[in-house]
Image 1 (tube, rainbow, N blue to C red):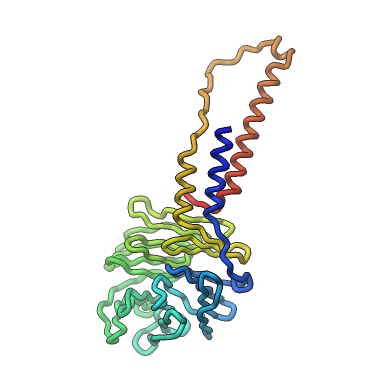
Image 2 (image 1 turned 45 degrees about the horizontal axis):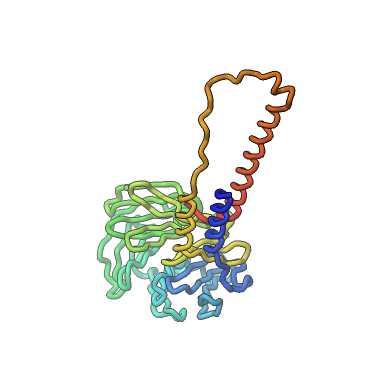
Length: 321
């Protein structure tokens, strides 16, 4: 009974961590990407019509942009200044909290071919120039190049770029690589379906199609959220988000943490030591059905453990290590 009680407590904690947000399924249909800012606003990007739409946490539309070519959204952590880069148009745009364009930077006249751009702050960009194989630090406020570094990296399947504390983070669909500004490779690890970086203070996160990874220098890439069934995942400072079947789910970081702690506190069943002695066959017991009774009891216990495991898997399939 104690095991069953603890099981139900854990399942309750797991389900309480999940919440369905009131966003119309039509708004989520055909979404190519979804981002959440730290105020709980949601941003939906669709490749079909190159639209970028912002909603509040109740599903009310705040603003919408319609592009003629694809744009990559860098981050929405600062909703007052959202950066978008287009390789096709060779330009970067900044929009405000109402999705109004506040600045546009044209790279065509000043550089070769920019494969990726990263806005470090409100005055500096880092640019990967494919034509000259250089990493360029550019002040777009006064239109001057601050630094230029030889950077002959592979641009195959390039998804994102981030520069932080003299380290250059390169994300492809299959790998994350970290370099120094001297083009020394410091770290490399496989990543499945990498999409973009997210930096939270000193923490570097990688967002993939259905998981969120954290770079830990001592351990490498550590999964902090994952659901194989999810179409899109993201996070802000308070929650994880995922889209499954055109529905948007939210998981409170605090409740997820509490559910994990509850799981860790569950007592583990003791496994009796296996005897190394060979059992002595008892003919009388075999004839009376005694050994059959023992086997039936063992099978019942195994089935109970399997059923408990199945219930746990159904309840917490969306919660990660």
